[in-house]
Length: 140
Image (cartoon, rainbow, N blue to C red; front, side, top):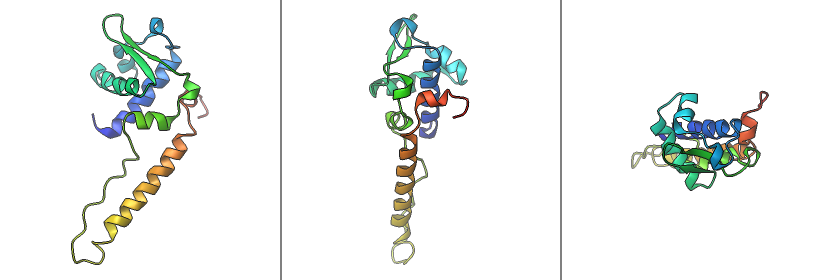
């Protein structure tokens, strides 16, 4: 799965877990059920939930009675945490190297990289104000 799809899948999975009240092992939601909600393949969901588990946002258990559950309340999980959990960024791209000897080509890649960095920081700051619980609100 491309990096750009990991964040939406992760946010969706967390919102679904919150919606289902999956906050303990006995209320775990299977990757098959999570995948059906998106819809995507359960393998895709398991890859993303593994990242969320490494970040300490959820726990998972393998097997027939397995699944995922939240380790924190949905109103305490911000979307910037989710983005970091899947090693995401704004995905605005990376400037190509400039041509040596060209006055524009030597400067523009550095300037574009700065602009991308500023946009990424702004996106991350805004995502820090939105929680997984907010995603479940009709007016969000």
